[in-house]
Length: 159
Image 1 (cartoon, rainbow, N blue to C red):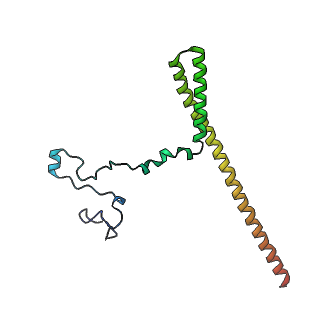
Image 2: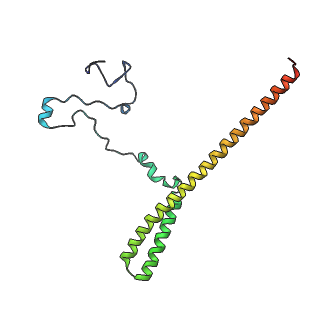
Image 3: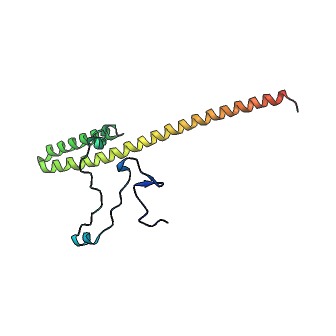
């Protein structure tokens, strides 16, 4: 095993590393006595990236593409609004109606999301089973044709 001073984090297989700079984690410099006196525990570590690109947060804006998101949100917003309107019509208490709207929104969204995801998983499972069944039947057909060809070939040549 190499001593610590011979290990260089900027080399790979004893060759200089030429890849992207953010592809490796740079090791901190050894702590010196003056660092202990000044109390800087972060000396040698890279700075945290402060600027966030909008492309990094793209998944937050494409929620409509998430399966079941649209349906569960529409169902929960409708359910929460209807229940809150009915509660407000009966009691004329806005705070209790708003409270019911939030609670019913959460309940309906979690319930409809879970049910929709269950249906989605079952549909995918059935499609995969149909795909594998089609593959299996095609493979059986090919093997059967090979067996028939081999049987015809053996019948023509008596041993």
